[in-house]
Image (cartoon, rainbow, N blue to C red; front, side, top):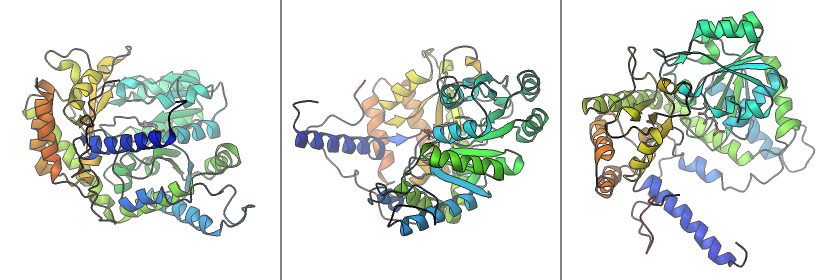
Length: 443
Ligand SMILES: *Cc1c(COP(=O)(O)O)cnc(C)c1O
């Protein structure tokens, strides 16, 4: 970058932001459940300038001056978070879902302690594995055996493993949750061996907040972590909730003075706005995500697309998977299919499936409806979307499919089920002179 003019670089970064917006909001459609579009006001607050103010210390006891108003924001956001998840305690000073998991590992285990986690073949996340927070903290990681039919961990297998390795933490909740996990049974195992049961709701935060997914805390999880920008539709951050006063107290000390010192109050304020949407539209949003996912999966199956399913069905959440390895002419897997669909403006990503156990493959392509629903798509639109996906899978002409995707996208410019109804049409009538079409570049 040396020798590059600052003005030129600023222009370039502006252009990149714009092209990204066009890729996600004009020409493309996010089928990826790991992202969302925000309430415009919540998004605006991220640029309000409050995030660079000091915030460390507890409300009422801050030793830097001028923080009264930010303290009120902190207290409000924390109370709304606890209320949204029907929990006694909420920790909002968490930079990401990954950090939330690290907080729990630090609060409930020492380096060298055993932990039992879901493997990647049922969507288990890297933050629970060797390369992520669990491994970096030095935990002794044991992957749970799986129950293929229910797309979760095998309860008897976890019980045997737990008696053998005496874990301090048992984690459940993955990046692809199809059916409710056996929380009550896992809690019994945790109680027997003296472990903490952590539910990772990175993806399920929205369905849990809106009541379309059984509440893990009410069913027995000691603590629940999550990302706030996936189905919850808030700022890019993390959140942790619990009814356990001891865990809450330890987590409080890990947040401050432990790992955050000055946290981003802009993110806290933005989260508060996002949570108010859950209070008033949450049950509708959660139900609609679920119904839309079921409808899309059904339509894809009708078109002969190999949707991953068990005897139990396809999904009871807002997400499901296509088994890319079962597609004719595509034995490569989920990532290759994701690249093919990206060329059509359909954005999704790979995910491990039970058939991948013991390999590094990710045969699945994960699809979620959280962003679709926020753009106003419902069940009735899913036949058309399924056709676009099916066409994208087989078409020799991705540009043509992309133009159809852009047409399908056109009438959906407002963010639904949020308090701020301002139209979000920044990119819809946009033309970037001389630029390549969005998202076509290969790395
Ligand atoms: C996305 C995800 C995370 C990490 O969340 P970040 O907020 O991106 O750090 C943790 N756990 C699971 C299961 C996830 O899917």
